[in-house]
Length: 281
Image (cartoon, rainbow, N blue to C red; front, side, top):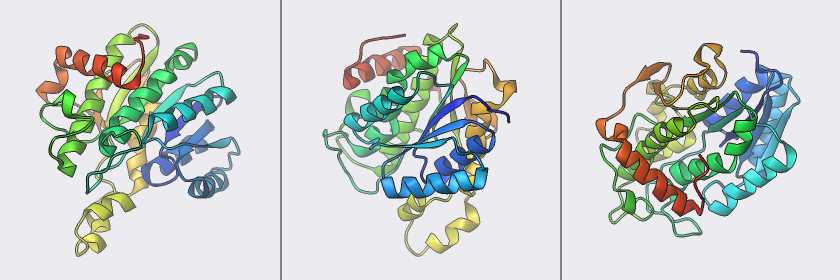
């Protein structure tokens, strides 16, 4: 990969897949802007990436992606420093064993996995268009719900960690398909990717404690998990490919509900209202 002169923003970049993706982009010569919630961990990751890549063009922006104020702060910080953006990787995400709400009363899985990338993408969309050709990479998951109750996403009536996680990732995929359609002709592409079953501290916390020591034997490393996002961000052969879902390195189909354009539009319009945005594409 040769990403010299390219400006890349990646969320959740201080650990796991995000950190390794940021490292890969830095090694390719890109100007990397890392977004992280914890300043100390972010600074440690930034220093490590600069050292390992030999690329000093690695910035750190601190923001809490689980709240709209945090997402808006990240967009403002980025736009204050830069007027171009060639690659946006919406990598930050999580799954929570117990029901949690953010400061604005949104269920945390929904807020972090879906609301945040939707809002951030739209806040940066004009800049991406001005920088075209540009790419948006949404980190999704193979774990997707079969259908979506749009009105209950923000505050589910019953909480099941895997069900709300699957709903959030289905929403990411549907958002990807809808946005690709709206961006047709702009030379800005958007795709979703399942990076694989990756061992991270968060994934290990979701497993029963008795099984945690064995997880590394059956799960891929963050280094391997970064490969699919890096390919979608930089592979010249994927120029112009948009509105697709990739399972690791292969293009795959998702469930029938995800392709229902009427449901995609319902979700998209509702998401604009949740975010307090007007249609811009």
